[in-house]
Length: 149
Image 1 (cartoon, helix red, strand yellow):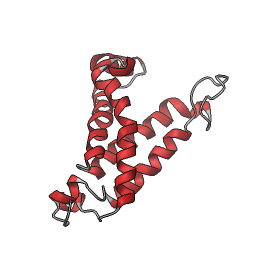
Image 2 (tube, rainbow, N blue to C red):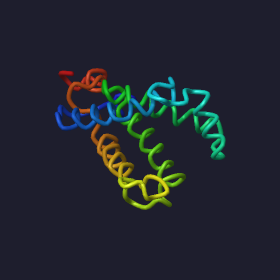
Image 3 (cartoon, rainbow, N blue to C red):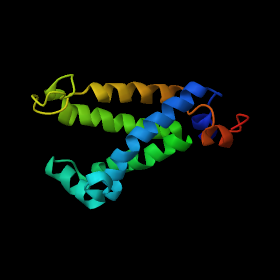
Image 4 (cartoon, rainbow, N blue to C red):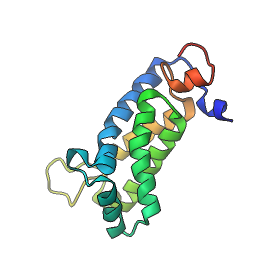
């Protein structure tokens, strides 16, 4: 079962997709987990989610999905699982926070908050990674025995 989850083709486009998504998501996860870049850190993030009515267990899952998921994507380890976790986070963010603000990001500062266009792009990326895996130079490929790493 695990090898089936990790199986992937030697595809450089998947490498680019997963590494870029991992690098973009890492700072968000590090804010939540470690408090880097002005983030609240683990306890601060769990507390903040609590003020929105989100149970602590879901806040912890969000933190882990963004932090560990981004690292998994960067190295290509459990790519499909990492992409699924990030997709869940993005869906939650759209429906809990961004949907009322409309589609567009808040470029002019005149909206009540950010729209959901960024989240749709991330969702599209995660769907491709869930379907195809981590591609070239992924640890998944090495572990699944798909040939060269």
